[in-house]
Image (cartoon, rainbow, N blue to C red; front, side, top):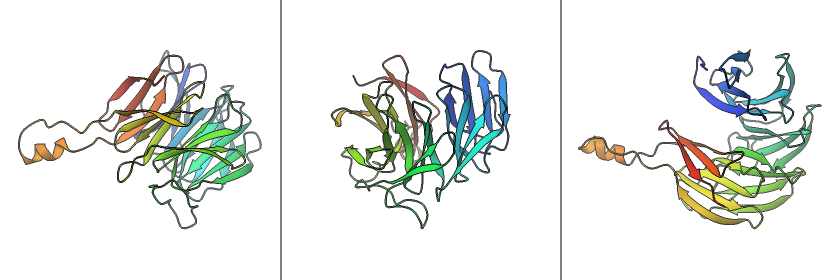
Length: 283
């Protein structure tokens, strides 16, 4: 399963039989997991790197987002682009289908979330997120007040509820119409608290947020309480003595992502040190 440029995004199909991968050059490939056979190749799906991928709930379509400021829907059988979702003023960093497949949610470095009709491709709502204390400034002069959006997580059992992770120390729960339901704050102050990734448990009762300081924060979504704080990325260990070694010992591999196992009580995290780590999920 090879790309010519670094892979930036992955997504499994709903039944786990297929894996979509997107690369820095804007290409997408779809593979059969059991055999490693390449089923679909989209060499120019985006004009810049692919940042996010998601299969539709029925497995017939593939949603992609990219640094070119667009999200696109592709037919898996035809390989054709079915629709293009444009309206964000900066990179689209996150994209997801709602569980019923009727809507698409995108999040951008412009600090906004947009909700689109999955079939029509029309924007139904734009959500300007309220700032969370400590959040990074959004990208672009026309950006909204909120920090860059790094994850959009439609709740699996509560229609219309979306958890949003931004470059700030907390998650925001919003409705598709833009009403803020809750803010789940990590309590982190100062550098290192901005989130880089987030994931919901299969039933939506837990929200896991990974911060750039290598800490995983786990919230009980029903109460909004922070229930677990776990350091999952450690500073690099020195391999030899001397000043260079001392500097290396303080280097934190950049945290990249978090995912939740669909059937087991496990959370996976990964970082720029090339390692994937598995953790017992908060329960």
